[in-house]
Image (cartoon, rainbow, N blue to C red):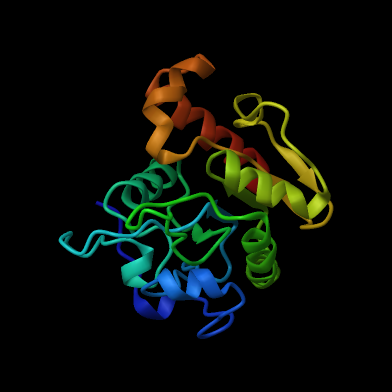
Length: 209
């Protein structure tokens, strides 16, 4: 079981942010990034889900106010980084608020405007943490991190575990599979699950130095 972040681990960039009125209306809490301020590795997800009020502590960022604290994805990605040898990563999302779908209760993809509005918060976080490596999880998180350098993705799977220099962020970007879809896609990359974790650990060790 990974350590649940403490409330004071949160890096609150803009308390009560209302840059995206629709997100402000449907969120319960802003899911701020959390972790060591001197972390070598920053993990970036897409956005918090609605959350699970019946879970124990791992209810999800929309309810806890802390990014990547869901019972499934949050615990899993923290376990992944710890097993890969980097337990002291900083965790955040490209969009800090739960983007509710029109039918209610479920997620939708953040809009380009929402991603752009929240990219300023992510930029502030990355400037303060100053990591050696940014690890976006999944296609959409990778796209928003690549946007700092005006890059796009032709095929997401081809980018997984392929380090890319980011002049804009002054670090390296290392995309990985989203934890929710890791079991589905890891074999497509030619890895067994333990091989994937080992490959991630090797890549991070090289990049962190």
